[in-house]
Length: 82
Image (cartoon, rainbow, N blue to C red; front, top):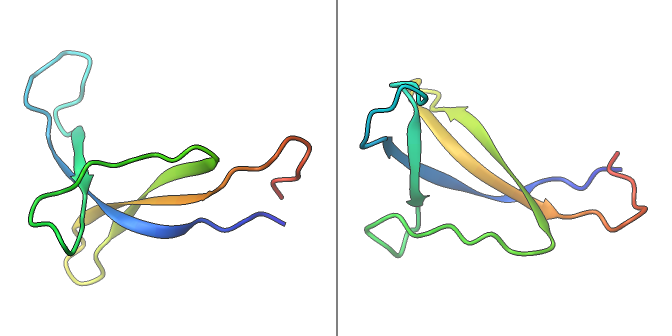
């Protein structure tokens, strides 16, 4: 049985400051994560032994796109991910 992702945090994004023919105009750059104790987004620390994924989430009232970072313990060698 697969381990669920937990501990979601909201990711703050911003427009990419430089133009490039290889980066779409609507692309975003990750600024940091929301933290109640900090007025500014805080850096994201990825811990060893965990798997991470980013998920798009739309606010139910506004439809605004937000991003959530979720983590779960990484599978050990030979352990099933089902």
